[in-house]
Length: 487
Ligand code: TRP
Image (cartoon, rainbow, N blue to C red; front, side):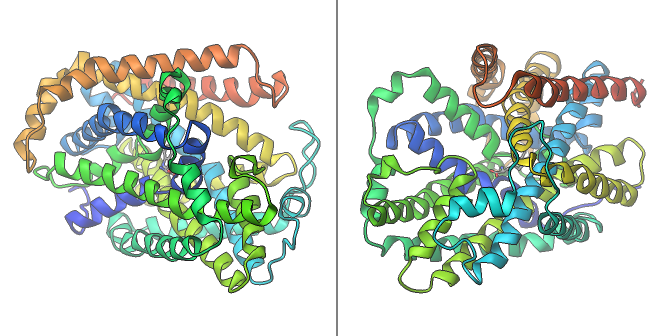
């Protein structure tokens, strides 16, 4: 049977941009900037974009498009011993989407709360006690939050209806889910920029601390951020590119996708920091002294606090902010489901069944994250899948293409179909620069984690973190042995 195709080039480019632009752009990026020395972070960030982000993006797009298969079968076809890398990648997608949809569910509930500003003047108390019902630790499950479960079901139903008819419908939906958040972000930017104290926030965001450049953590942080923000190493870009006609451009598309994503992050930084500046001004503290800005607290504590202080149109700003987060998250979420479902459907499961069962099991497993201990587990799973899983797949992709398939073969193909040619520097990045740097990222992480992890007890990290990574690797090995179609 002929493989499905995107309705047009721009459907594909929009879908890939939609996957890349997500919750990561609005809180993870500004927060990393803040943590790693403001404006100076942008230098390693753009170096990472050029030496790892764009080369890997081109690599993934060309594998998907050339093989016309999603990650597991594409890698199996390259070399049957290495198919497990593709399987592992799509299981990472599944693992990530299971908690990503829970965060989306939080946004849905907060969207409703925005109509009444339900968090009142203590957003942090509201988030932790009233909303999450946070338990005493990961071992104490507490109760299941019914509103969050209902919102989670709604999120999965939306995802199901968008992808159940294949990429034709996805290709149309992304004409809404990509421009909408950008328009909402522009509105928030304008509202933010006109607030008192906005300038201080933006100064904090951009002011370079050049000493930070000699700190290896900053460089590692920048590489990690690039990796995750571009949705690499999880089978997504390979799956999306597999629905492209064989002669489509790769180099230009890859660069457009990468720059559109990183440009959005840079812009989102202004919208977020102007509001943080206002918050600091209202509370009479310095921008650097704000609490709860890192991680999810930014969206569910710091921003809501600022919203309820707004002199005018507070509810409207709240509604726009949570609509922004939902429209950012949805196309990232369905891209991860698509990566997984198309992976198993290439191995022989019927596409419609693959989508149905992926959504159903994703929802059911996700209920764990709606318990009182859900927040702890979400943090643990997020850390391990991102820090160890994705970076590992990135290194393996470089090794497979660099030393088994041969970079020159891929480059020849890319240059034949693309609107401009890529040079030998690409080979150098894939064979040496990217794997070496990602290898250092992994070793550094292992070392840091080996020293212990202050937030959680060891048993929780071993079961929730290491067990999960090893279990996924073992499943990937088993599936690889079972589905070597090209034997
Ligand atoms: N890139 C998205 C963001 O920034 C999140 C995302 C989508 C993602 N797919 C991914 C992250 C795969 C890691 C792996 O929010």
